[in-house]
Length: 90
Image 1 (tube, rainbow, N blue to C red):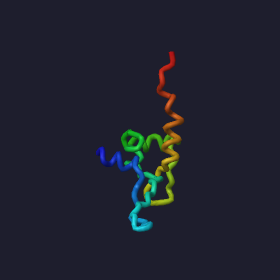
Image 2: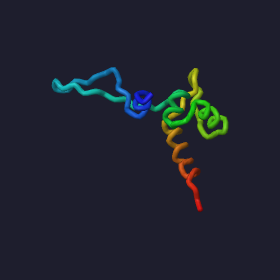
Image 3: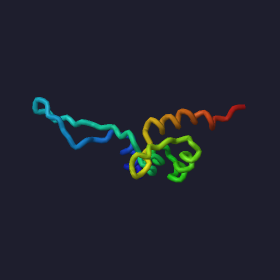
């Protein structure tokens, strides 16, 4: 499970390597869209919570493909918008 979580936070390597003056460098492609289970792991919640947040209009997946895809920007926006909601104010 930890390896899967690390995969979501690290840039994803593409299959193409660029050779410059005999030195091999890797080209990285950052993952920008997540399926439901991946989005849940990214936010640290259960997959059913992703469904609830979507139904309440707090997350906005792209439905252009077979499965809804949650953008990294939308997930980050949700985190920043809701960060202060759980802070206790006396």
